[in-house]
Length: 138
Image 1 (cartoon, rainbow, N blue to C red):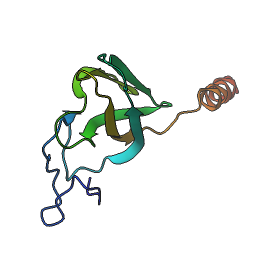
Image 2 (spheres, rainbow, N blue to C red):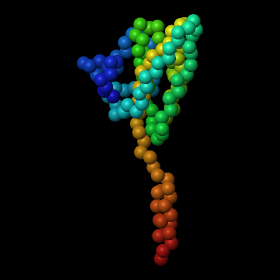
Image 3 (tube, rainbow, N blue to C red):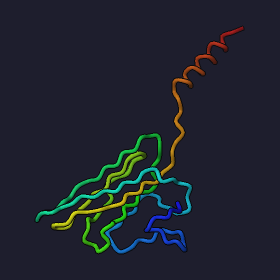
Image 4 (cartoon, helix red, strand yellow):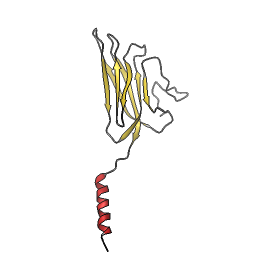
């Protein structure tokens, strides 16, 4: 998973977390064949005396297997939201976010995975029926 995003060290081609509230979960191996299957630029602003908390839910059309999720905080001074792992499925991920008082958050979310080849059940059924009808021939 070599990419040219700001969070990848150009000399080592490895994920290098910078100061901030970053999160990584799943099987995040930099030299795997996983592909970037989803990117999101999530910005939530808070202009009042309050705290924003919530859950970011990402659902991607199946069939695929999500292998790695990286949440990169774009507010590098540490005042942005704090992401934490909620749950991960084959085609979905949930990330909890705890905002800081009076602050919003800005994340780049990268989801890596493996696309699974779709099997057409109608064609399989037709093939099975033709085999059955041929097996009855004498």
